[in-house]
Image (cartoon, rainbow, N blue to C red):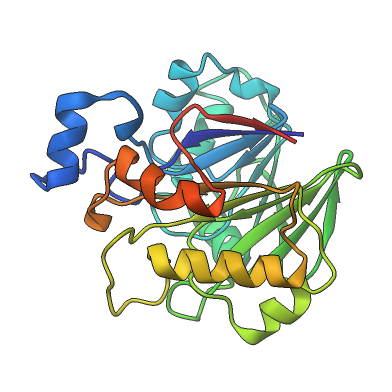
Amino acid sequence: MVVHLLGTGGAEGIPAIYSESRVSAHARAHGGKDVRSRTSALVDGNLKLDLGPDTWAQIQRERLDATDWSAVLFTHSDADHFAVEELQYALYPFNPYEVAGFTVYGNDTIAEAIAVRYPDWPLDVVRTKSFCPFHHAEYTVTPIRANHGSGFEDAQNLIVSDGRSTLLYATDTGVYQPETWAFLEGWRLDCLVLECTEGFVLTPYNGHLDLEEFKDVLARLRSMGVVHEGTKVVSTHHSHNGDATHAELEAALRPVGVTVGYDGLKVEF
């Protein structure tokens, strides 16, 4: 399996819009891995994980063809992950297609927003619920409940397995609640993509991980055997408000065996 990180930034991206923060100024000056578009990913060139406002730019940069996707899987409805307007371009009158070439998977909030926006459009939308696995092509996808947002939405992280390899894509997660920790008992991951939104900055908000919480979550997953010696661990969803450049994140996370994700990174496992 291959996970392709198309974007690794938080909601504002890096450099952040309307910002002169230290991290944004550094990214403007240096470019490269410090420039981060809004977080999304692609599994095996087939399963699109979140469809945010930077989608068009990401597929041009990576020379991708969106008609290769057979599914778009949404984690939750925050605007940096769920750009509902982008779905319409798969269909007539923007393209000659009468039916979209992909299935949309998302929680009740996602499904209802699509129904309101496109009540008569031929979009194949499948509702997902945390801890209820579903199948798409050769993949089994198991959403698990993230600790993110108001609590009124079933915000999800996604376990994706093709029968040989298993990925946990965990963005906008926060520190898991007991039900999610309990559900993860017995799982073994080949790859973990885990958010580190708040970086070096501690905030009262518990819906994202700072660096110390990231390390704590990773240590607990290792103690459970969910993450093991062979698991590839990659960070994502970095905010300029975390006050960490790419090099500073590498210095902090390399000692705990973590690769700092960047836009365009491909991880094979």
